[in-house]
Length: 175
Image 1: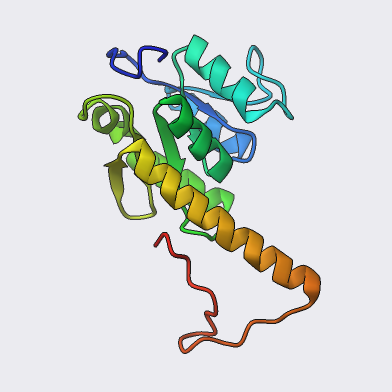
Image 2: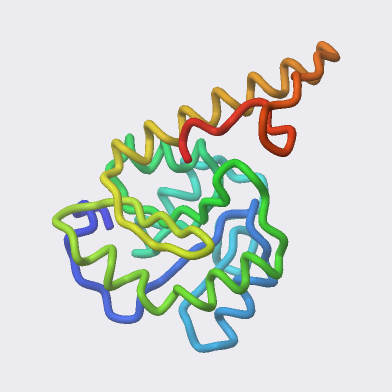
């Protein structure tokens, strides 16, 4: 992948970062896919930095699968393709993650290789789309700002006023 992702790969290789469920990675591997997980045998250990995980993925010709905004930014900065399981500022349960992955994983490699150069494959519950790494970085940085702002408010004991719809006070700018 150090060639910027231009090389065709047979049998896409994936590495799930440690924020994702190891059970989902193992279930995909049980289906015959080449899937590893941070902390697995021969993979970076749990607690490894994002840089270490990305360097390992590059050496082993793996696509990083993540929901970590910092990893998205790093992949964009390093011009490495990435698969973003994007719950749009929320969290998916293990079952939701598994269902989304099982339903869409067959198309991941095709979509990433359908564009010139490295890109970000954004996986939502019902859609897949390939976007430029710079767009992914911009979205991830925006979500990080929202997350940090919410955390700061919570630490200060500030409760946001309920919004007009279902109490949503701080809509995610990346959606």
